[in-house]
Image 1 (cartoon, rainbow, N blue to C red):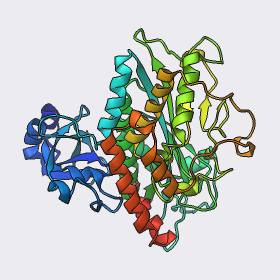
Image 2 (spheres, rainbow, N blue to C red):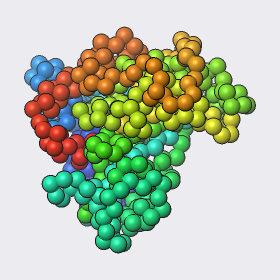
Image 3 (tube, helix red, strand yellow):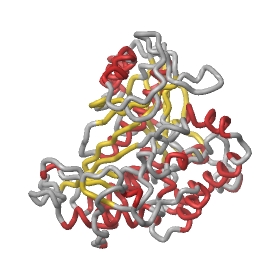
Amino acid sequence: MKSWLRKTPQVRTIRVAAADLNGQPRGKRVPARFADKVVTDGTRFPLSVMNLDIWGEDVDDSPLVFESGDRDGVLKPTERGFVPMPWLEAPTALLPIWMFYDDGRPFDGDPRHALASVLKRYKARGLTPVVAVELEFFLIDDSGKSLQVPLSPRSGKRRKAAEIMSIRALDAFDTFFTDLYDACEAMDIPADTAISEAGLGQFEINLMHQDDALRAADDAWLFKMLVKGMARRHGFAASFMAKPYEDYSGSGLHMHFSILDENGNNIFDDGGPRGTDTLRHAIGGCLTAMHDSTLVFAPHANSYDRLVPGAHAPTRICWAYENRTSAVRVPSGNPAARRIEHRVAGGDVNPYLTVAAILGAALVGIEDRIEPPAPISGNAYDLDLPQVPTDWGKAIETFANSPLMPRIFPAELIRNLTLTKRQELHYMAELSPAEQVEIYLDTV
């Protein structure tokens, strides 16, 4: 890490940042000449900082604040090391960090540690998840009283229509996407295909699959920061909020995963289109945990505007082969690449919690050999099936009281996330829809 800074003397300042429970980067600005100390010794800030609400304020009932004296933890660099921050004017680097106690124990309220804990359980069984994410987002002109698509830098025109898989829509913002891909290259984020989507000014970029799920979550977290920062540099906003426009589809974060055994074989592959028993058991776990873990996939008030029938977001708890109306989809294609696509999460999620919730649920299914119901066919919205919670308050209490969530997340994280969301629920009720959009547009 120190050698990276030696090779990039143009970097004048660094940011050290960790993801809180909402996925917000929390940290400090440090002059580059003092970066060696951070790399060697870490940095300190209160444990409660990992448990702030969406406004960045303390959670009133949190035992991490006054009850414990608001004590510090120590934050150490992750395996990622320094990455450039191409959206800033001055040459700057980001050092991702995560929280520990002074005695070296991981802080259970840190979402990155929650994912690392799930992955340790996979490793103990000789298994390695292979993960990829697809992230949808909106480009938005938020300079006026109402949100709208930005003017195209090429034509100077504003196309007020959704354009699914339109080359014209991509080309309209070619300068932005070219800079974005260059920045992904600089940050070592494996950005692959970009398409235009069904929402107004909506796009999707896929991140390549990799056999390091922790790094895949890092990539998603960094990518969200990058897209939002790069858009502002180009004079408009980018937002991953679940649904900024009432009349158009919202944004999702779809996660694909397979699992390798110790010999590198895909344990979902049976050589044909059906997949193995283990594939079904993993699906069974995902479906069993889906209702109780909806808060992770839909963490904000606006998230539930996306979870409505017929709007390209799954609301029924079901699975299918090659069917995008289902919550869990098994894509077709080469059996060696047989995988599960989990489609419930919105673009506004914390990637660490989302990947942990999905992989944790799949592992429960494998451990308990959970058999899912039969795969559906046809339109899931028209079928009489169990549904995910469509009310934020119900999702909070379901998560808090679930007998299954403690098999995936540590008790402290469950408590902290529940307290955070109860506080947000209370104060969001005092805001108008326009004020809620203003809060979520830049944060999530």
